[in-house]
Image (spheres, rainbow, N blue to C red):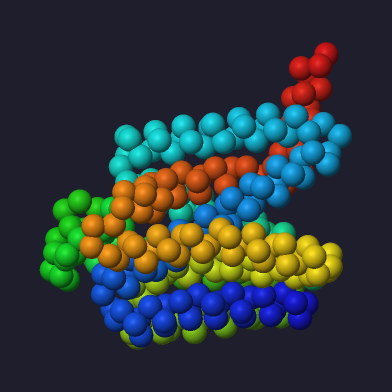
Length: 329
């Protein structure tokens, strides 16, 4: 239990530290917002590609590795095709929002898995659903903000409050509806949590979530919602941090060699990206910078990562086994 709590605290503090450092050095500026997006991409790429590496290596330790490779390939092709379809026919912003919902669903399932692996306790998913409803509600309330408007190359629109209001009222959802959506979302997350507690117990967890929801809701009603870019980082960056810390602990259990190897792999992934991030802020950066930090590419890889991660779940493994058994008849 202590390991899990430490993981959560350090993950959250890591995200807050990222916001604090970028604010100290860059202020509340477009450069800060770009630095936050760059941080998400850098740690996201490390998370995705090392995840792919270890996942594929694990296939060849199974009785039927090529079945897993075929499933992995099908899910990858499907995810890329789906992402391209959404980007082409719905546009960049809807594709990001759909991807975020998909990512949140992935994060909820992963949190349940993490709790089980670090504490041995299987928490009913409905508790995590209540958390997901609250987080999505808070994120939605933060959307009417300057930091919502950026393109695939991390360039933000220069908008004041009037233009933000105009954009939402004319092209998205009227801005007056966002507060009622937040109120309804808070009530709904509370009701889901109440139902979970009445049905399954877990009184300490229910109390902690209830207090957390209440404190955050009061702060938001008093001071207003956080900037969209901060919420985006909190949700996505927290996920990357929590699994990095988890695997650091797991690799350390396997011995010093595995532990150092994992650290080296992460460093080798991150260092070149940090160099490119530095070049991003220089005049006339090389074309490789915009190619690597293309947020559409990052979103597509996010779709692929989430879809292929379901291969770790028993339900998809059962479907895979039944399908190949049927083919073999």
